[in-house]
Image (cartoon, rainbow, N blue to C red):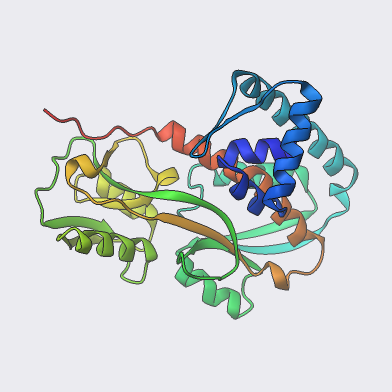
Length: 292
């Protein structure tokens, strides 16, 4: 069931294998055994795509409930013994709407673990990890970096205020994070390849500031898809904006963790984060700008 849900949530066998720490072939074998056991197909596979079958859609709801019940039982029996303090740094573009929900759920399941949370930009949190002020950091990383362990990927998107007109270019008025942010660099590189360039109108040290500026119509922003808010619309290639790379989100510092608190949080985070990221992206459902 856990393999099945991982494949459904991540949209493929390779991504699911990375997430649950197994090989792609092992995940494929488990899905094949599941289908043999049920006597039906749960995924429709082609060389280019993978999608749930109608039976797979039905099974997914039951699978989530089974896993929740399993995890509840394990946490009820084992979780109360996990205790300690975890100093956690989380980049503020990671699950911005769901972070309080995640932390509240963790607190209910592991009441003896005290979590101290610091949010900000990854480039500000990582030095705190190096200085021993944080135990764990969850943040974005450059696609070519091997820093930490990959948790998930999600698209970067261009966003603009819902009532704002499409910038004519080639200068694009931008509401952006500081110059050292990887998302800002990705935007600059994509624009340069398209013969365009950034005109930084507004700089914020937080994603919340960028979101507010975009909604207010100050400029175009670049955000992970799960950080898109109501009041924004997407700018796509149809609007003259070049494609952006995916953002990689990583967990850094787990190799230094000691005790049960850190291990419990890492396991919990991986089990709950990606489904909520997908849910946030679906709920945001921003529309591209309309064309005449």
